[in-house]
Length: 507
Image (cartoon, rainbow, N blue to C red; front, side):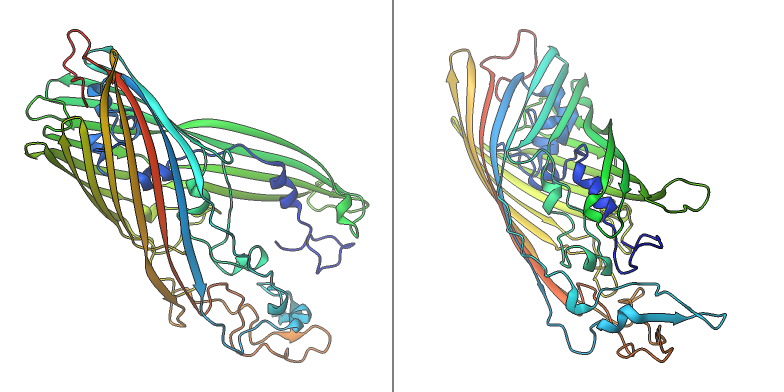
């Protein structure tokens, strides 16, 4: 953060006014990256839930299938454990920002000098990167489907984390991160896998062979407005703060179609489905009015304005095509292809990282039914949308492959059927190494230009020649990791279909 332009402040001292604002807390921005990562934990749905879901998960993955899902409820206890690593290459000598940066100025056109465009810290005074332990998180996942009519289904789907309502952990993807954690962070994991997700959906079976669905996920935006008064600029711990927080809710819609060529709506029969999830994100807008004792403010104001904007849980537009059908007695296959418009992705500070690509992901699932038992295997490949990080930015992201296995048994319990299932999933983030290049389109920035001069003598500044940078990703880094999840699923559905309904009793 640049120093506050106050004559009574040491120019090397920066007031953390925005930190005061954000420490007060803001409303959560709810999203669905967790569901995008894990799919449905119910045996037989898995990564291809857009075609196979016949329970509450259909609310998110394809609301058209809510029209043919049996009434009932489902709850899962899901455990997600990430093990992600980033290793920075050894830093060569000669690239450090020296202590003399505090005395650095740049020549001006009028013969004088001006301040540096970048104001890096001396490399020896950078924050020491902390190795944050990967946190295992427990989630409660569940929902219900209601059937007001034999051709209409209504449902809701809910994800509740066991620790924390919503984590928000912003970071810069370039040299500015030296002023914060001075570390590298995985772009699409971490805080994106926490928080509450609430979804609602409705499905309508228009004719025997076609269903249409609409769904929505709840999002929150927050605005914080803080008045900060500093009576003594030499003792910033005496700052007095009042803050007002406003949280607004909105929805991110998604749509689904399901086609049943044979007229049957069982997941074991031929189903072709298509879904569209519109882009979504949550925002936090932090505004500060900063006041000092005995200070003349510019522009006829009575305060100094500061503003910061953060984006959380940015999800691109996604379009999915999926199909499932029986290929042998008791055996069916399902496949999914998904397009994600990651080129429109915005990072946590609202920036658009250059070079992000739209990508296609693919998944396949196999399901075998034997009596009351169901067994499932699935696999997925998802390429990274992030380009090689040869320049200024340090987006940590990897291609991902995943495999899962699941088993479930359905038992009659009075007038209902109880399904008990166990799902185990393992994701591998493939090893990726990034090296910085001087020929990159936006290369690592020289934070202490060669023409810098000493503010006192006007002589060339010692240590300014060549490239000096505190970019956390310089000269390169490698990333990889594992994520595993386990889910225990309990589902209750009617023992028989409702009178006059064409919905089968077993999904």
